[in-house]
Image 1 (cartoon, one colour):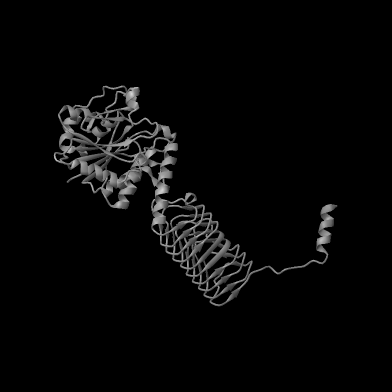
Image 2: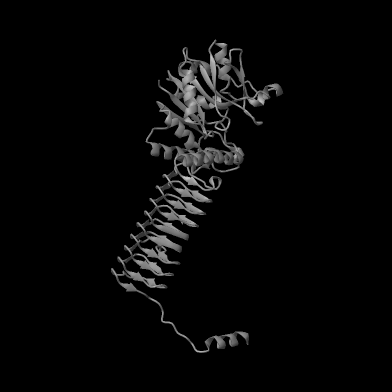
Length: 449
């Protein structure tokens, strides 16, 4: 069966009150549209296309990013002016005109839709004979502005009434329309040719295909989805609600897979966060995109981690910021108020507190004292620091990159290191201390006079 998928993503999203197109807003670490592209890609369509508005480079970039990641070709169609969902499908004519199998129509602002639900629609379509249209509906438990699905005596779809055109009685019907449709490609052209804009909004409604199909004696079926899963995003309030749904899913998946979340509601994941077995995550931890945590690692409270790899048995936190490019070696310890960026921390190494480690290779078993800074930026370029195995860096030291500290070398506390320190050498660069007899008394007398 050759499935074609078309995603409608040309809406202006005015209710977001943003210069950024709605489908580009971030949800769980990636754009809204990526979720719909992802579930579409999982369905293995023959073609996948997106209807967009003109002059929307942000949307095009989001599509290109997903295409590069998944290695699939994604076509785009321009809807020059917005005259309804039916008009949007007309804009994608080139991508469904030769369809003989089902055409799946999705929306770019419904990120919670799952593959299992779409598979239910495909299963309904494959009944003999094929229905002309399969509609995805839901039981509405809260007031909303979704269209309403009206059923006939056999339980098939008789009509879909858009909310703006519905009577008060029709609006009380709890069976809502998600907008998602599966249409027989062999019948789509004939149905689209009859579509008009004779309604309150003077728009071409995709839902009118139901009445047109029924008028030709065709069967229109419906499949029930979960109301939460079919939630659209039109405002930032909707966006926050969708975020809550995703976070709940991801927290449950992590715990069922063997991770311990001490306070699940205070832990925030990204779409690609990977936690191993017997990982323990304490409260108030935030994972940005690109994080992998291996088995038995511990992440203590108030950590922010993004594009980093924490290896087996490592302990991170509290109050640690792991920035992109950080690799925390197995059994290492990263303590409170430490920031690490573009660095590899060797097995069993320790950076216990109050330090910045940037563009650094820290060897196995090395120990970095409190207040240490690797000075990696000279105002023009970044440079690397290399610290050997079992080296010891005393507290309040500044390592001026590029610089290398040899294996088992020691840097005395308070040093500013500008040259290489050989293996097993001891380096210090403190200014000699001077004690002025009665100096404190003289200073106070001067200040108080």
